[in-house]
Image (tube, rainbow, N blue to C red; front, side, top):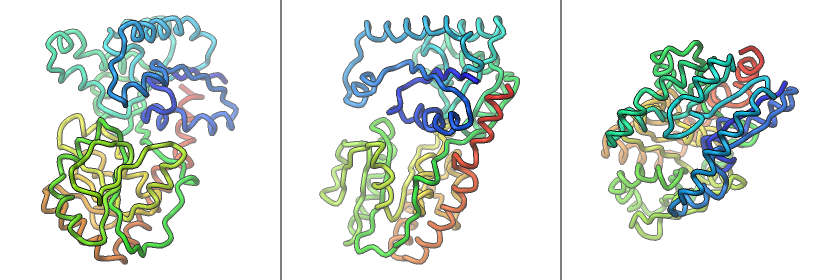
Length: 351
């Protein structure tokens, strides 16, 4: 069986890596041949994270490459599209696939539809507000990373909707063994675009870092919080992310409580828990499905709750250990490739 994955990014793009690339070795071991064709190339990601503008000629090249790739779709038994075929373009090509009886699967790990239907640009809002609804409706199956995304897919009229959370390879994420630390590390992993959620709670971390033996580690963002040398800014690399997370004693996932954030798939939390690390997270969206409050972590809403819950974990090693172990168990049973692989295989082979 041959499957074409039309991803948005190359492997270093988090959404593409987690929703698609990390499954490929497991799928190929099942006898499924994978061809992947990203919309944006690796250099685009490098420039994006460096804040460099993208040349219009380069963007045009990406659109043309994707267009010509569509002429090869009949070589494959299944087509998997990450989010949409062409960003900020009409859903004409998805409709053509539907009309030509090409039964494609479309995958979502965030509320990309809000890029269009909540856009402040009136032209984008007018032209594209129903675009993702149409992409979902024309598909043969929608893979949704959480219940909020699944609800939108059902509203759009999608024929079939399957909730497939973003997961980890549980064999790569080794559980924490020693919970006794002379320095308590509060950690966050993400990208420059999501660092804004940490910045929002800078006052919280300022208070927490007044405790002598506490540090804050930031993986994947370099913008200075202005909180001194107790904050460490660490470069993200796929090869070292698990090792760096394993150094955390407490993992955090702050969010705003808006529609866009309700589409997020709580992947940071799943990573932390996979390493047996207790978490403190905003009580928003899927965070509330992954974190069982006071069992494997804490759900919080106010700045004072952030301070109180972080302090509680800092001073209670037994609580960190108990919550961390329970989090690891939950991830292994509900949020691992090993547990979800058969779901994806069934969709690819039966749709």
